[in-house]
Amino acid sequence: MLGPIRFAAKLQGLYPFGLDAETVKVKQERRLRALLAHAVAHSPYYRRRLAGIDITRCALADLPVLTKADMMLHFDDLVTDRSLKKADLGAFVGDLNNLGRLYRGRYGISHTSGSQGQPALIVQDKDALALVFGVQFARATELKRRFLPHLGRFLSPARMAVMTVKPGFYPSAAAFAYMPSYLAFVFKVLRLTYSDPMPLNIRKIESFRPEYITGYASALEALAREETEGRMNLRELGCLKQITNVAEPLTDAASAWLEEVFGVHVSNEYAMGECMALTSGCIAGPGAHVNADLAILEVVDANNQPVPPGVEGSKVLVTNLYNHVQPFIRYEVDDRVTMSAEPCPCGSPLPRVARIAGRTKDQLWIEEAGERREIPYYVFLTPLHHLLDLAEHQIVQTGPRRFVIRAVPLTGKTLSADRIRKLVTAHMRTEGLESLLDVDIEIHTELPRGPSGKIARVRNEYALAREERADLQPKSASGESAPNPVAPI
Image (cartoon, rainbow, N blue to C red):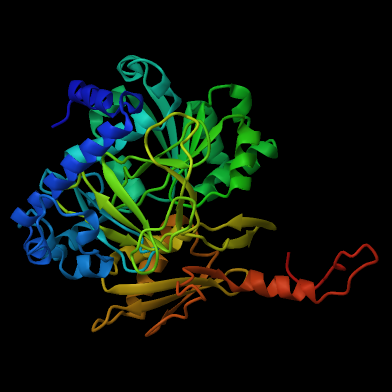
């Protein structure tokens, strides 16, 4: 088990300015070969898949691609701890009382939301969980510019506010639930939920005086609106040093606005539950640095062929080099990513993700007390965590308070609309939204795909219809649309 002293030693090894490109390459190669050897020795699935491949010297492109569907179908054969079973882990995450409790005293379990289709179970051991915090602390804050700053933090813990949705087994929340207790010596965490009343969150934030704020883009933008409208005065407190966006895409315009509002740098991380230490947001500029000594990120076209830096890919293939219990080797993720063609001005030797166009979403909202209130996409995803037979889904807003969840089962499987409705209703009740939302459930055999072949996970058809109506309104002399007294605000 990692204790405080070992954790400090880990941080020193993760310190990015002690690395150079050649050292990173050597570490990556060594860890890749170790991962392949472990997978072949302990995973029946990989033993079959990699048969006939010389894993001691093969090129990465010689290895087969792993899809989420294949991983979940062959889960019991893929994991290297032969006692782990998908059914048992599914039951474990089905009980929220287990959140924060290590499975069999060894493993942290999480469950992806299914924002890219089918949900996935993720198993990590204690060292992997601690590493996620270590790499972000060492590489994603301005502290890395000081000599051994992390040692001093044992005497003066950093203060970090984290704003997500309600506690659950989705990776970003589960990571903090499994955070080793000794890390309290390094930083104190204030955990906030996006669905709690904003005045309550503001009081907690101002009392806590965070140095760092981490949250979804939608949550960060909501905080910025509170600041600009005078309901929060975080900038005046002078404590904030950095803001970090996770889980949702953040546009350049939104990032610039957040920096203007709060007067601090906004870091933009790119990761997924299957590899949470994939990148660390650059602390000096836009983009995120791939932790290439811990993971391999391949940006490829639709045929899994690499695209050059500066060109947007159709998807990415991720190899997690630090998780040996559930090997993710060339794991396919439907994100459109562009790598930087130029070295980063910050001086880091790590490759830089310049732009992430994947995981885009429409804005969902309702009207409450005459004001518009945003509803995060993840509010709808949380109850879908329990549906291991879910292949695809889509959340559609069709009215000012009406939403439709469209679900497609895996081939040969079935989904119960009644069960989904019960899960959704129970979750909306815990979020305090039951009386504010009307949710319908539809079971489909397939969902329509856009021109790129991708399914829009979220659509606000109500907003689109309003825009179309507005376009049809008579124009005033100034060229603006005339007011429409019928259209809802």
